[in-house]
Length: 104
Image 1 (cartoon, one colour):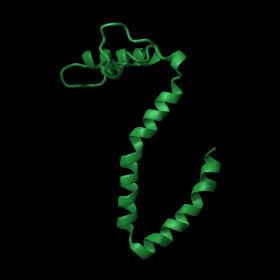
Image 2: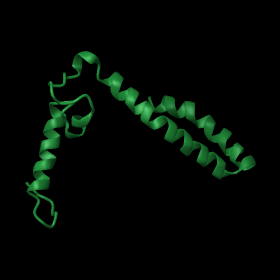
Image 3: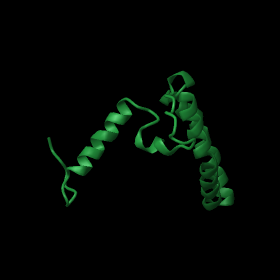
C-alpha cells in the first residue's frame, strides 16, 4: 500500500515543483492549507462514520441528550477506548501535584 501511494504521488512532486518555479511556493502552500482546512473535518467524519457501522455503534441511553456530549469521554465507543481513557484519568489523578510521571 505504501509503495502504491509512492508510485501515485511521486509524479506530483515533479508537477508541483515545476508549478512552484512558475508561480512561487507561497501560493501552492497556501492552496494546500486551504484544501486541508476544507477537507480534514469532512474526511475524518466520513472515516469515523464508515469505520463504525450502525450495528456496532452503541445506542445512547435515554436522557443523555441528542448532542455529541459523551463522545469526548469515551462513552460512544465503550470497551478498549473506555479502558484507556480511565487509565489515563487514573494516572492524571494520582500523578501528584508536580505532574511527575507514575512508574509501575
